[in-house]
Every structure is written in structure tokens, then in C-alpha cells.
Length: 355
Ligand SMILES: Cc1cc2nc3c(=O)[nH]c(=O)nc-3n(C[C@H](O)[C@H](O)[C@H](O)COP(=O)(O)OP(=O)(O)OC[C@H]3O[C@@H](n4cnc5c(N)ncnc54)[C@H](O)[C@@H]3O)c2cc1C
Image (cartoon, rainbow, N blue to C red; front, side, top):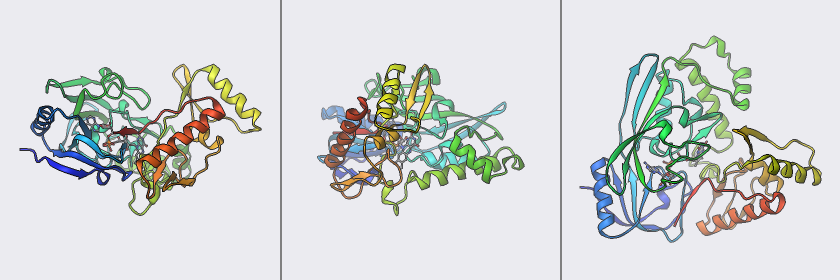
């Protein structure tokens, strides 16, 4: 039987360390627990919020007037298939410990996603990505429990609607499913990927990759480069680094059409800007750096107001020093308004705000 607790403070369960209490809270270690929690919430006619590691979640200062269901399903197994390995991972396994394990075993495919906090089950939700890799490129399938029918279904990668920091689980099927297991296809004794210029530069200058063996040795070298880059930007959770009390990137990098891009460049030139606008091609459009837009709209790293601020190490990360959710959302609005005024562009939130 699942233990249902009342009036539980939510801030301890999030990386932002913000939010009031949950009316009901339970931690589920099996699919049966999950079904029981969903049935109980239904019998009380209360909403349910699914919580992984809380590293992309901001709860309201008033908390959540319903059931917060924490995913705690555990288990990892590997199966060889030709040159590949299939990893079956339960949703409540920690993401980075799983990445570390695959690197140690010499399995390539997710090494650049080292250091991302949170649970495996949340990775398909926003298709986590960093340093030129996205989880969608390694996901074979996602097994879900449908909240309404309590039916389990395995969705193939192509059925998940993955795109930049999104999926069907975040868009048209938001709130419909609970991810219970993810299967990854990795390459046995593989070479690391390091297409991202910042990673490539360090790997080429500091690591003699050609002297390193395929598999564990070379994958570990790239993992270490990624972790050290992330640490410098306060992107690896560290209780001793107050800049890590964040949700990582607070805003998405906007994807714009040619007309919008021309407008951004024109505004920038008119304001006296000489350097090029940092952009990345994205399908038939262009992704623009949200951090750059924020800085050029007048918001600097380290800007602090009412106990919250912009990280001293990363413009895209908003940080809670000793503030409230209200103060954080006001700061987010101030930044959005500033960017809108300067570039006539609306920034979308990457983080999940739950009230
Ligand atoms: C310091 C820092 C650095 C970060 N860097 C990155 C980065 O480089 N790239 C990146 O993409 N993200 C990054 N993030 C954001 C975050 O770590 C990821 O989005 C991560 O996948 C969230 O996992 P979680 O378990 O903490 O999710 P939570 O915050 O608990 O949940 C996030 C969302 O997913 C839903 N959810 C969680 N688990 C399940 C489940 N099993 N089934 C259904 N829905 C579920 C929740 O309801 C919520 O809507 C960073 C965050 C921090 C704090």
C-alpha cells in the first residue's frame, strides 16, 4: 500500500527550493503504487502532479492543492543487439548516474548529456539536450501509463513527437501519461560525439583523443570536459554553489523565421551593436540565443532583486537565493518585457510553473 502523507513542503523536492506544501504527497516505487495513487486522487476529486527530481519545476508559494506523486521506480538492465546495446531504465533512476554507468561500460550515445539533473522518466518530456546531443537521438521507446485508463503502452521513438525541448508529452498529450520506463539504444564500445564547438575545442586542445581507445576511455574524456564546462556555468547541482539553485535554462532559445531574424539584426545594428547575432540553423528556421537577447536587452549576469536573480555564471538561469516564487516570476516577467521592448520578441518559458 502506498503511503500518502499530508501537508508536505515541496521546496525540498525541487532544485529551486521554492514552493509551499502539497495537500497530499506520495512516493511511488511500482506501477501498482502509481495506479493506487491515481485512484485515490480520483476518489477525492483532486488534481495530480507528477514529480521527478524537481529540477525543471517551480511550485507556487501556496503549494499544490492536490496530489503530488513522486516517481521512484527503480531498475536498469542492458541487452546486447548486434553492435548496439538496449538499456531498459525505470523512470525513477537518476539521469546522471545512468549516464555515468553507460560511459563506464563504454556505451556511446548520451555522454554529452552528462551532468543534467533529474530523473530518467523526465528526459523524454522536454527532450533534454546539451552540447550538441538530445535524448531523442538515443531513445528507442517510452513506456507510459495512461492516467485516465491506467493502461500501459510502449510508444516508439517516432510516436513521441520529439523536437527542440519538447515532445507530445509536453504539448497535445500534456498530463495524459506517466512515463514509467525508457529504452535507449546505445553503441557498444562507441566513439564519443563532440560536434558542439565549445566541447570540440577543449577536446582537441586538452585531450589527445586519437590516443584514447574507443569506448570507456574516450567517452570518459568527453564526459569530463562536459562536466567541467557545466560546473563553470553552475549547471551541475552543487549545494555549495548558490547559483545552482535554478532550473537550468529558464527560457527557451526562440526559433524565428527569416523576417524575424532580419528584424532582430536590424534592431541590434541600429543600437550600435557590431558583433554578429549568435544563431544556429534549425530546420528551415533559425534558433537565436535567448541568453544573448536577454543580455542585449540590458540584463546582466548577477542582477538580483527580492532574493532572486540572474545567475552570476549563466544569463539564462534564474536563481533563488532567498526569495519566493512570486519574486521569481516577477523577475521572469521583467526580463520578458525587456526583451519584448528591445526586439519585439516574446520569450517562452522552458521551466514548468505549477500552481
Ligand atoms: C542546474 C541545472 C542544469 C540543467 N541543465 C539542463 C540541460 O543542460 N538540458 C536540459 O534539457 N535540461 C536541463 N535542466 C532542466 C532539467 O534538469 C531537465 O528538464 C530534467 O529532465 C528534469 O528532470 P526532473 O526529474 O527533475 O523533472 P521534474 O522537474 O520533476 O519534472 C519536469 C516535468 O516533467 C514531468 N515529469 C517528470 N517525470 C515524469 C514522468 N515520469 N512521467 C510524466 N511526466 C513526468 C513533470 O510533471 C514536469 O512537468 C537543468 C536543470 C538544472 C537545475
